[in-house]
Length: 381
Image (cartoon, rainbow, N blue to C red):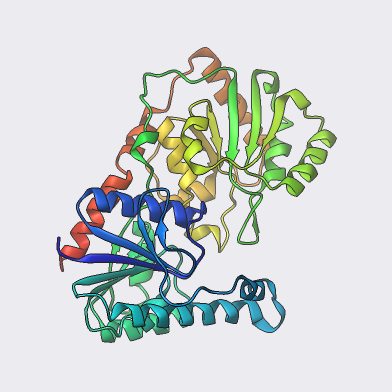
């Protein structure tokens, strides 16, 4: 493979957000396959924790300008973010003149790709989308389709079908969310007792609630709280305090619940070795309909039993047996399914082997291999 892969991101990097973890791991896996990769970002030059090379095109962005992202009056936040992408794209365009050719530009920002793609030595533009593009993004994609060879990577077959239905005439392929190989646990290794029920994440995602009060309401109705422990991991301190008060009102024993501060992603592997049940309590809405939380794969890689609401789980199109579901917004049914799982694990603390096999097919090595095949071939599946 003679192409150099440049991942262009105007968003903060390095970061432990899902996109940062996915980017870092994927590019590290591509490097192991022999690819030459760099991450172009607006903040740093050097290396990230995965050993990937970072390059900062242009001048350093002043941190105070990011305050505009928090101002929602008259759409200031939205336009500040768009202008930042435009500025970053122009910086990349200038820096690309120094590249020797056969460059693959990879980004999650259609505007950045459109501005940077004018460079004559770009062989291919790959845009990775985790949400269906809005009207403005579709305009950028149409422009890219006329200028350069373009492929769009999406995170599921359903997303591919939805994107193709837009009729943009752009070639697409699936590039699923993944998990590090080291997360994969042996199915013969028993789960830890008493059962640890965990939620790994934040209280909100992009302004959308993650239903942690629902978790507490359901857990308060379980009949086997004394045979388990609930841990909410990564919840912000202010939210944790509010939820602790709510848990007290629900009369959840303090010995049965714990709030754990942020765990660095490099420590998630070890933490999940001691978990038994993983919660993914997201309701199906416009935001969550295009979402595939990497925690699902992290839980699955450990053989942890996953609980999620029916509609959200069905939307993921995951094979049967990987996720156990409860009725949407029904805390009583949540408690019933949780009790059933805890009872089952107390009798036989076995891991979910179906989930482990599912995760084995979605490691970063597999993701990188698929990416390499796609950029080297004009024939898409």
